[in-house]
Image 1 (cartoon, rainbow, N blue to C red):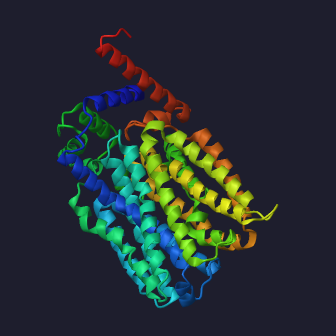
Image 2 (image 1 turned 180 degrees about the horizontal axis):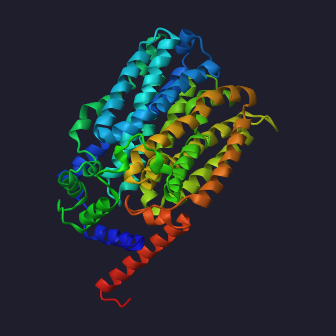
Length: 515
């Protein structure tokens, strides 16, 4: 069956079997399952923002002898990223070896231990050790969550749920900033210690309930447990829990064609499959694009060092900084959820182009407003702050839904766990530029960093335009034809167009209209 035929068959199968009704118990169970997985995204969002808020507390800075933009501050932030980098090898082994659920449980258990160590720190070494373990556990849990979500959702809703998964990053941010505002007013070391204790919250939810949800059907099938896999697909994807539904049969057929029970996913040490063909190299190249511009579009500077940026704009009151941090988290989440709502309609490529283009414009405008050139005024400074927030809204709208979705879609099943792990390693490696390089850079060049990010975002727009393919509503197993074509981007357009035309003709035939 050609890629066009499969895309057409999928559209027709979706019409014949639209899935469980919203009010059904199966759909409610599916939503609860997704929620238990989605809270993993809160972990990352909580850490980045709680440390930004804690770093703005004089109680924390005085206890450890830090200042807002010092290299030592960069180490406190960056050791979390180092933890994520060192989790690389467990991340390539555990999701395929013990399953997606147990891998999430393992990661969140380590995160909880690390957060408790950080909260009880009496020295800098103890704080750094706790933050390293927190980053290690968070990386493991997040990768397993992305893999699981991409495999449990149906093609028609995958974009929406994967977008919400990544968007819950901002739920963690909102909770972290919300609790930091009143706690920051408490003149005691327990203000920042309580903030770090609360980081355990999302991880505890996942750890308590993750073993009660179904395992990934694709992982089960690859382990020879076909009946269980089909039953899960029928329960969550079929309107009548029918394993013989056209939609379920199509999904099972494609899983059978593309998953080997003795596949490369069992050889956790073997990374050759990621690079042994032009198709697989292209797929992973798209993952690298998401890593580079998902972290270095200017968003990392704002996420980690918003208090420093606000100081550059003239806002030095610590409580005011934390309040603005909360506003930024709320508006960013609105942008992310809006992007998640439309990603299955407008497509991945268009949203990606919009996100990076908007980021470039935002960095240019903020850099010009905060530069020393021209007449300086409070109005101009306020405009700069407003555009910082607007930048995060448009970035979250265009990029946040795709950071978890796009890499999971373009990788094959056998390469997904290893590919996402390696992509996560690249993401964390790129993030070290934010966490270690930005504090001294902001202190030395200030507003020029915005212009540097502007230039880098322009490179991103060109790269995405040349290489990004459209994967909207394609099954995870039917993309091989696209990536083996001489020009994958062009081929993805042809597949989508042919499928739309065939579905249209089929509808006309069924309604008695001559095509």
